[in-house]
Image: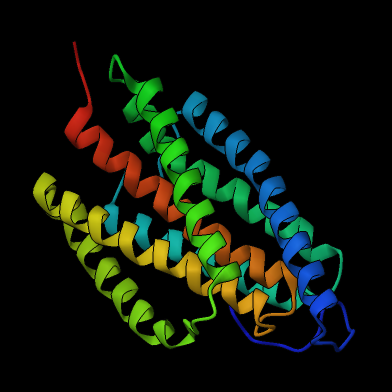
Length: 230
């Protein structure tokens, strides 16, 4: 996702103006990506969509296959306008994947409030981490390998909990995931600010995944701790 390429649609540059342009385009595309995400989530709720309804293991493998298929397609098209369309297609798919959690949360009497709280909390985390990445003189590039290792641990634990269904384990996974992906926002935004990532489609994909995972895990925690069935 973060290939550290020196091209933005074919133009090699590391100037401050170019970095600011990449960052600005990244934020615009990130905002745009929320539209298909919301549409996908809405459609998924209407259709009661679930990739894991049959076999959780098959669903998990199918999800990874589709996701990495999108990653490959985005990587191949990121230097053209087609890359934007592929990225938005991916965010629609991720909206579909989000719909199961949204539908479950809406089953609480305070479900809509929990969703808005998770959205607000995610916005605050993103704003805070992005601001630190932009103004801080500290180099956070060394976080990359540790954060990636943390993601692998989360994936293994999440896969195990598909079968175990342990609320305590889910809570622990979500707390750790919020910390890791919040740090990833810091890492990925600074990659753009420092010129390490010069393609705004790649940058948007990385930051979108960070924000998406913060939201999902924050909403999971709110549902576990604050969901009201009355």
